[in-house]
Length: 264
Image (cartoon, rainbow, N blue to C red):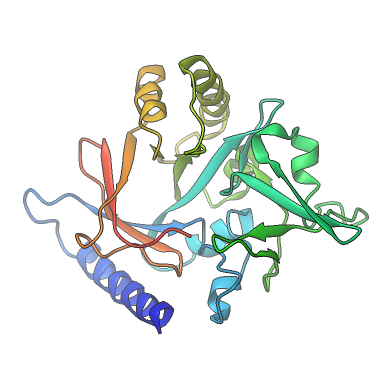
């Protein structure tokens, strides 16, 4: 019932967003932007609602599917940087697999690019990827089974493969349990910026992060794209829902986003 209520709320938000975008903006009101959360939606593997397992989140396929939904102007996705310096698109801090009946996990940022891309389905159909599992907040680890599975991707592949008309909300993803020094943050952000500067072209880009130091440093490193610090404000703007469509008011100063809802 809780998921159904959230899906109904999301539908109402989408319909309202389309109406608001079709009407002239009221004086002093910031534009309303509809964003596909992790593309066409996050994957809730334990949910009985099959819509939450329709397509692999944070993949080129998911981004393009979201871009075809009426009213969606941006897709949001999480970017981390591999051990060998490649920006990749993945939400969780750890990635899991199973071998010989044993489940093991590794920190995503400790992996070289080739190993990260070896999880799940492969672009080369002659190759078999490692089984990809996901650890849930309740401690269970489940096979990452979705109806339309897709290979993991890099940030560059997202720029090259996603409809150029849709903007990117690039969330700078860091582990809340780790302390980061400025030098480490700078290395990660510069690797991301290199890809963005080389491949964004005319695509609208917004950077965002729950990590305030990363957001502030990104502003220092560049002034071409807006940077937003994210905070979660419950019971204010009921706009973030688990079916993956994310609505937010993007202020002209572009320095803070307030989301309401639950992240999983």
